[in-house]
Length: 224
Length: 225
Image 1: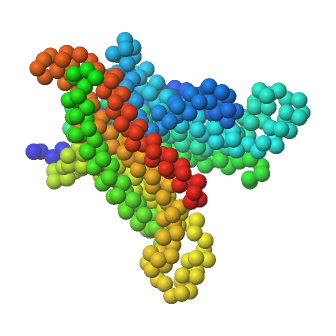
Image 2: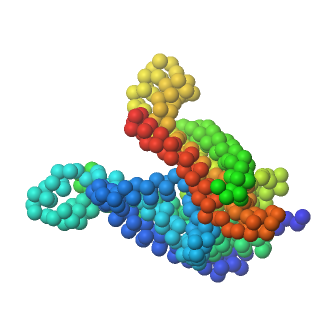
Image 3: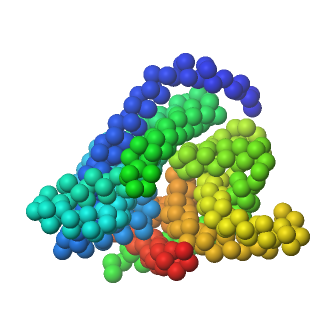
């Protein structure tokens, strides 16, 4: 066996187009899924905190199913089992749908906790001032509870970004799939792993840094 | 129940389930032991120890676990042919690397939540650093560590499915193998697709294992904190 020489620079300069396409796909799926899980989390979290009948119970079921089954099983369900029911989705759709469903479930818990942490007296005050129930939510519960929920929801978005790597199993050409496929052709395994390791750490660490900055900026005046 | 179901269920329960449980058990024990040691190192005054441990924790918490699995399964043998592991072992190693980083962070929090006076009182009684931690600090910190450790167990059980990506036969891969077998023509299969039922069954098994544990974690959180 001839040992290949470790040459990270050669690997990157020869394959940067494909790797960049992979990174773009990772970011594309991540952004769609982050936006989707933000909306799902906000709506269902509010429904849970407000104890809206039916929606609240359905949300509990949804959250428990997502939390207590592996995301890989969920991806297999959507990719391999849905076609049996005649629903055939392309790889990009499977990618963003599965991480959105996953992130939305966790995010609804983040927002529920945030909304429930808003002191009751604030909401009572708003109602006493003549705000409607929706007005109270939009003007009082959302701005305060949303800020409380922000750090934990960014943590969920970080997990969403990391989970896009699982799209390797459905062959969606995001960063991990792209890099491993190149390595399978060129045998530059270590270079490929180095590249994806560095890129994921850069993505995750910058998001974590964003949490810390936001935590300082958005801290409620009382807790400062 | 249709005829095809019985051998499928038997294979999943007899081959897949034990593998999932074995990988999870090894990983959670390994992650706990390594993590508590690393977490204690994070509370040291030594800057070098803190920086090294912090680097380990941030790297393995930051990487997607699948990437860590690939590093162990593909990367280590490329470095040294002797470091070649089977898919289940490679997954367990990756889960220990990831899990120990999680435990280390939780341990640091738990140890630092023990009041300074406890350290000082133990020191005043003549305990050295090791004795102080073994007899006074860690026994108290472990109580606070229990809820995150149960959550870790749930996460490790679920993430043991990553072995399926590199061909390790655990619950999910056992289900996938049976789904594929059924699509073959007789005698091997029946020429039908039953992905929905089989992956649904796999999901149900994971739910039955995880749900009581997540309840337990939530209960311990309320009781012990």
